[in-house]
Image 1 (cartoon, rainbow, N blue to C red):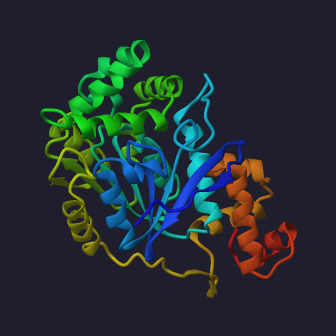
Image 2 (image 1 turned 30 degrees about the horizontal axis):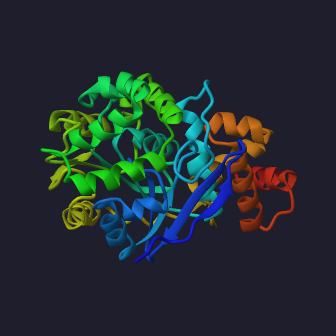
Length: 342
């Protein structure tokens, strides 16, 4: 399977986000693999085989966060980790995904974890690979703090020497380094690394409600198993070790761990919400939005209360009106009052 065609969607804050869809089945959204480039990732050593294996059994959705890959480049100086949420939301809302598996790897998993915390009704299960609870839990922090900014070529070469015992074979290493340099610009990755250093993930992990699997690759050189187990404890997650130098180096082992985890979950079918004895075909988040509409909240106010973007609120409002066969917000407020939803 070749790399799927790239598509674009614009975020609520104006960035163009590149995404690609391949395969069929239950949706699986990849928020981060550590190599953000929706096309070249398919040529990256081992990662391409990993993506092909996933696409054989899932509807695989990849995206590049802004500042990376084929998405808009140029990260602002006042960036926060929360500023990447609109990237994920834009793709998920555009594809009208109701429930899906969510996958994130290494330090960029913060984006996936925050989304799962804020949208538990959408995330069937969260899968994290080689994830530490803080950025400095990864080995060789000086590599990210200093070498990345002072000597870009040395940083990229050293990183791929560190992740695999003994380093990659020379030819494979050169290919990996070339793809990595196309996936990230030095200035953007320096900003992302600094941001990650001051954004510990522990508090978010403790808020997770979605069933979570934490995977650790036995030969992953940048993170000790003890740090990955700490992540699992904070998230009250299942922990499993898999073979290889990274999560994607043994796709069969990874898929077996995911299969075992998912087989033990209760049915992911969301129960029908019933209010006042009448059935409603609304998700739990749509019910929250409807209650806030009935309280007279505007879209910006609802966005602040629920920690979602205004664009996401508007999508929920439109869905509510369609499902309840209503014409406007005023009718929705009356409907909520008459049916005891407020």
